[in-house]
Length: 447
Image 1 (cartoon, one colour):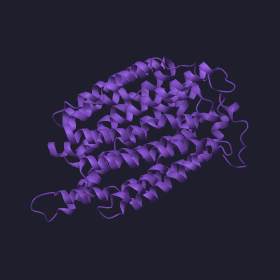
Image 2 (cartoon, one colour):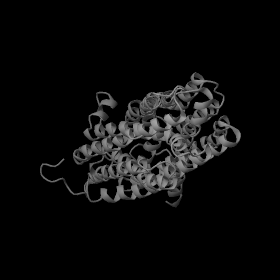
Image 3 (cartoon, helix red, strand yellow):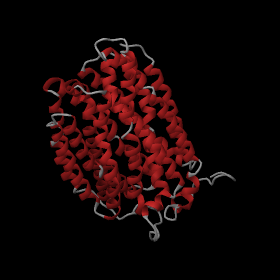
Image 4 (cartoon, one colour):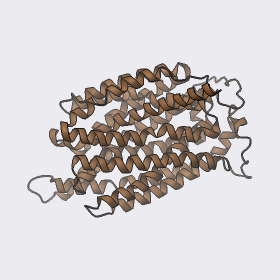
């Protein structure tokens, strides 16, 4: 028994490390976007497209990877994915123009597409429903810690050795983690359910079987808007600190790493505890908690963006609080996906969810915010004879960032929509019904 628990902890630790490296590598481009923009003479919209390149193939390849996660050995899938994306991250450092960088970032997306479906599927089979919120919270700690280390280290390396070196140093840890991935537990699908029936035989598509779940439709919509906001934040907040608050490359990335990383860690740890606690008293508690957290995050981001230039410390503190609330989304939503989807379809469900998150959300966030930034920068430079000035670019980006506050509000609305259907969907899942029998039944007329 103790040996089995050790293996489960080892597996969760490796999954955390994979997720950390996943987001470390994603954060590099945002950390070095400003020197790349200046060296190649790019607009903010072009910077947005370079951030989007990763998400395009990530979203599309994630769907077949999700099916593989439901049918094949997940440890091998994870090891192969980590190896591929590590090599292509290093290749990003050899890019010589917009097109070559776009191509390498596309390749990184192929490798990283395996992480979320396989990782979430494994956690669903390693932990019972009552403990999944905390386990998923630990897994998702890789996001803020990965962003913290990626932004901080990449900023320091780029300031000292140039932006290309920031991509090179990320390669070697990937090979070690890929070897560890081959040793993780890969239990049978549904192994953590209290009473597991045989998987129902679907005559139709497994994708349709997942999409018919109303709660998942709401969650998929929330993911698209959430990632629209997340990837715009990750791409432009370091640049915002440079342009609007006058920070250098190193200090801007350190500030971003602090509020995005530390705030994320606090949000995920507290969010995992909150998600599990509210699920014991209310079937829709996770969705309601997530909706409230996103509204609080929107309010905090509004206050931070309204600060005058130069107030970096206050900006970090306020945005850190907003980020803490923002990260509560993950444990609340990821645990709910496990609640309403049968074990043999969880990899597929995560793949469809991530398809929407990245293709409909993450792919457009940096591009649209970049275009809005360019528009306001041109407006600010309308009377300038020297074209768009750096001061105008600072003003344009500041105006564009307010779009992200609206995104947080819309995510909250979709989670409230999911709160109206989740109780019924948990009760109708034939393989999960036995795990929720101790929860209070919904009131008359309530979903």
